[in-house]
Length: 229
Image (cartoon, rainbow, N blue to C red):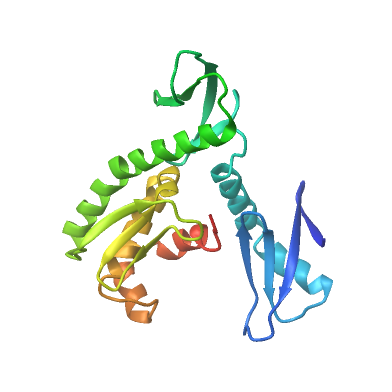
């Protein structure tokens, strides 16, 4: 696998040759890592392309790592609203199921006998679903009032490859993992989907409308682009 040094960091990446692309672009994906996509280039050229986006790549790798914690044990760091919190796992034999509590400084996860990682992940998914509704829905309602863009309903669900979507009928779907992001990205996501209620594709009119409410949308879009959860 090709790699390039950036300061004291080493960025490993793969290349996907796509002749139909007019320019090169880079994604950071769960399971695939850093991927350079575009027309065939020499190794030297590919390194220059990766170095050009090196800091962005390192920031994105941190976000991917934060969202994908792996096994949850005492000492794990769980990301919530843009910050990583310490996790304390405790065995409580009398419990019937996994219990997840958050006290604004750490996660306390109580597990019964015979509990496995699948049980813990399912309990965390339930926690994030509840918190996504609690934290994100009010912001969606506020931005809807502020922009004047209306939606038919909102659903919070586990989505593998998208942060959110807006249907033809203007129903908005939000990935429950979005509640792990900082509020700046949550607001960007919410307004992005609201603008889709009037512009169904990413046309110039879409971005022009979005910029009225999120002037720094390009920076925020870069932070979220390429993320496949």
